[in-house]
Every structure is written in structure tokens, then in C-alpha cells.
Length: 105
Image 1 (cartoon, rainbow, N blue to C red):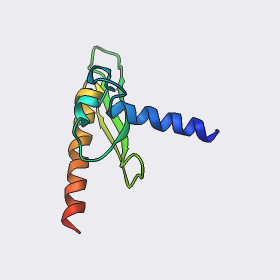
Image 2 (cartoon, one colour):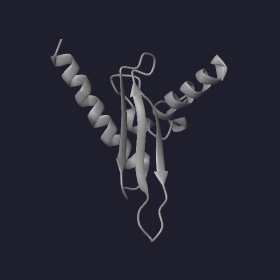
Image 3 (cartoon, rainbow, N blue to C red):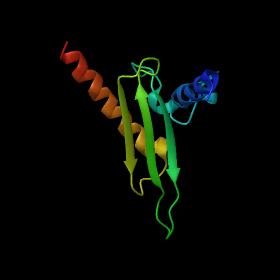
Image 4 (cartoon, rainbow, N blue to C red):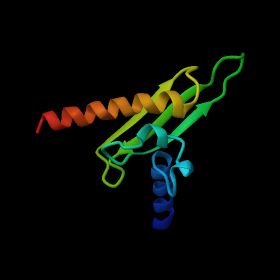
């Protein structure tokens, strides 16, 4: 893979949690990470299941996006949409990570 291809992938992961223009253009997890202390890169997901059950909800990401020091995966079986269920869980865990990191300085 060429370096520019890696950059485009990273840019896409950052756009999931931010917005490239006005706030109506926000990524799927923009509403969750809006005003977050660090730049998070990630991907939301919703995995459909059979049998009339709710889909699985997931979010995978890392922060800070420009110099990663922590990664996270949040998965909720039959939880619903990734941006509505798993991403907020990941945000809470990342907030706790920042809190603990700051308390240990």
C-alpha cells in the first residue's frame, strides 16, 4: 500500500468522529465525540442478525488520532446501532483513560 493510501484511510477514520464541513456533514460518531478533549479516529458498525433480534453494535478506534497511545473496541451484542450504543460506551472508557492518565502525572 502506498503512503497516500494509508493517509486516506486515517483521514476517513478521523472523519467518523469529526466533520469535514458544517455539523450536518458529521461522521457517524460525530455527535458522540463532538467537543471531546482528544482527537479520536474510529469506525462505527452495525451487524445485522437473523431471528428478529436487534443488530450488534460496535465501535473501534484509537486516540490521539495523530499520535496513538490507546486503542479501544466496544461491542454490544444485540445492542442496536454502533453510533448510538457502542460509540458512547467507548467515549466513556476513553474519558476514564484521560482522567487516570492526568491523575498519574
